[in-house]
Length: 261
Ligand code: ACM
Image 1 (cartoon, rainbow, N blue to C red):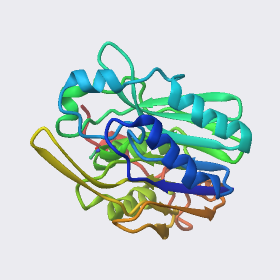
Image 2: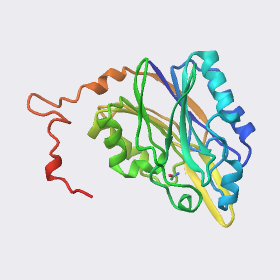
Image 3: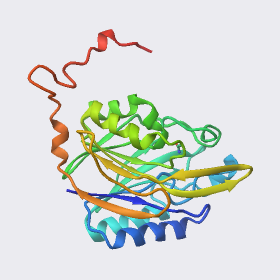
């Protein structure tokens, strides 16, 4: 299958323009699955909960309409991050395909001020079977909690689609370990640019990337430019958890010895 990561430069509070920017990057690329950044339609740096609530959309709102229209026209799938309307909104990711909405994920580990804007995710880490393999989602800061990727892998994910708005520098390298320790592919789609709002300036580090179950970085975009990269990958490679004659990544786990909550 052909896997694409889309790195955007959204303008805060301009969902229609941001969706257009993403679609214009996607139009010239053939892929089976496109992964877009976290909150790619709204921007990230909300000053207060009212702003987040105002820009939140239902899962079948205008952003869904635009991207599911693309998925239908191109017979492909798209993962994207958006603020999901609810009493307290969720920082969510949607997986859409030619038939419409396939699945939702709600960010479990909220970062920084997000804890004042969003409700923590309550859907766990679901995995969705697609024609080319099983896809699960996590969002940005979830990378720092190995339980996120492990939960997805234990549920059978072959690929972790990872919409992000990274500000700390460590994630692109850390995803190599997440992929190695779970023998899965990852597609981290990050944004670039700076948002200076309400006395808080945040700069986003780009470096969107695709990583293999062997920890190889198949492609990594730059720190300053929007862009798109596509690679052909065989997601079935994620099903081989054997390390050598004696070791298997999952069989050798020792849950009885691990810390319990
Ligand atoms: C983040 O979770 N957006 C850093």
